[in-house]
Image (cartoon, rainbow, N blue to C red):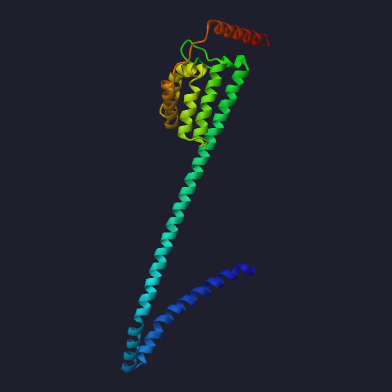
Length: 233
């Protein structure tokens, strides 16, 4: 009950005080001028002229204070904008890394399960994607994530890609998968950049020697046995 009338009384008091201050500021000079002779007014005028440099000084100080305040506020706003941009970029990178982790998990499932492997589309017309191809894809994507998270620099990325292209399997994988990958990721600046870097490493690599016939047959037999065990399971 008491709080209901405290605020109106306080507001009315402040209004009356303000009106009184304005009235006094107008009435006091009028009364002083009315009851003061010319000699006193002239004396006051001389005093005012004498102290006018002090007023100019304080006006200059006030102006500098306002300018400094505006400068500091502008700098704070700029710092806040930079921090906000950094936070947004970190959040975007975290989201992208999380999505890549999901992709990695799906690829691992396909590597471990022959039935899930057959779900994936052909890497190129007439060529099914093997477990080894999926593994090569993971290896290349690891280099991309490492570069985008600034774990490695550009020179390190290029060195790693050149080294990876000495692998027969990775070299063969990129030859088969490059066109399909570019068709899916075209237009994405980061993906286009990485594709160009892998292309450069691929073009500069010496094509590894083809596998010997015995190794090819051994690999084919091993793959057939794994598929057979998977179907039985």
